[in-house]
Image (cartoon, rainbow, N blue to C red; front, side):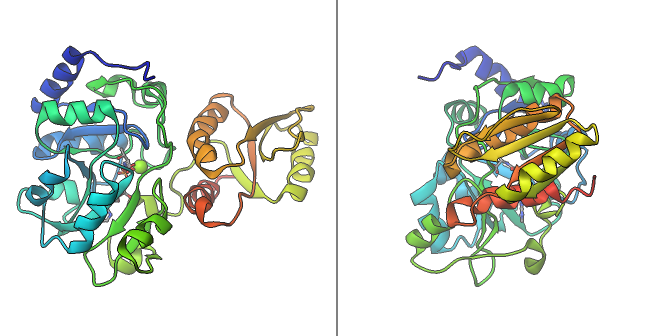
Length: 330
Ligand code: TXA
Ligand code: MG
């Protein structure tokens, strides 16, 4: 049961704020978004100011239903319709050629646009009440961890946002999978909540995971240092994990360990606090950002994470972990 049913008058108030050019943070099934009227360049600029995000990094436009796709994109290939039919509403963002309606401020002056129909009752209600497209990046400061609860948004953006709709913890907890359909080859620009295998099965072809740079696009999620917690993070295989933890604890550091195991080896000892992470990729993804937020809150000096498995289901998690560890802070 969803304990976070938002009364209709709050949805209407949020829609009114969007219409007047203000921002509204809202839950989706992946992470919380920081939304503004996608047709209003001044409103969209507020998102960049609040996030501290460079203005040439494009935003995803959220729409209520697939039927709105032609209003925002043109030359929509068959594969895009197939993916939309199979996975919308859901954790999939399609990069397509943009229509004239999309302002430059949304796309970072690129001729493509990211579009997604989110799968969350509050996002859906808001999109229907508002009527238009809602441009929304994840509701965090640029380069920091995405929020998966309304509290995370409060903590990091607080009073800067016009309104925060609380829909409880996000079901998936990792951002959407981004698929580019603007070149001959269909490619994944960011692995995420929807597996590449599911895309391949629907399109009946191999789909590559590529770097945005190769496709001449600026996708901020592709920056090596993206998704970084403030606590410096290292990733180690199980046998190395505790040796490193004890080494740092002996030096007087407060150490958090993200232990991936069903065994009873998650033990707290002098200076070391162990966080037991789920063995299933979906559950791990659901918990990851929330756990990183908790660890950041508790002011640890170091975060040591056990290397996740290298299999398909773990692609998005490995991607986020690698970027988090690449923050350059030590
Ligand atoms: O799950 C999600 O995708 C969440 C929820 C709120 O929908 N949104 C999200 O937005 O993660 P953001 O802005 O944090 O990440 C979106 C990524 C960015 O890396 C952005 O650069 C990329 O999508 N992107 C947006 N439009 C693009 C475009 N036209 N071409 C290439 N990349 C694009
Ligand atoms: Mg983001």
